[in-house]
Image (cartoon, rainbow, N blue to C red; front, side, top):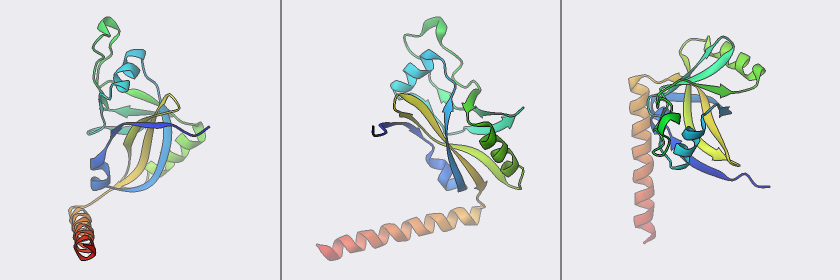
Length: 153
């Protein structure tokens, strides 16, 4: 059976602000109305981050808008949510995160075979000059592609 993946939200700013070292796919503990809201595509990873506390991993500041028909069952949109990873993966992430400058950043949120998954990255922050280099490289690539298109036609 092929993996059916439906994207919900993507953190576009993460690749601009961080060097991505490793990526992990993890489950996320959600309430029923949160899943219904995600099916409508109402989520944002913009300011979110993950941290390890007491041997468990949590995601903070991930915004899932309240479900419109949810009434009393709706949860706080910015509540802390537990991520589901194997214990050895959490230990590995914990030891890697202890190193200087590393952080855990959510990259994307998606449905995979009907289950909500979060792509988590071990990342190192970029300095301002690194961001400038990245922007300059993207601009150069864009110009090359545009020039190739004009040459072909």
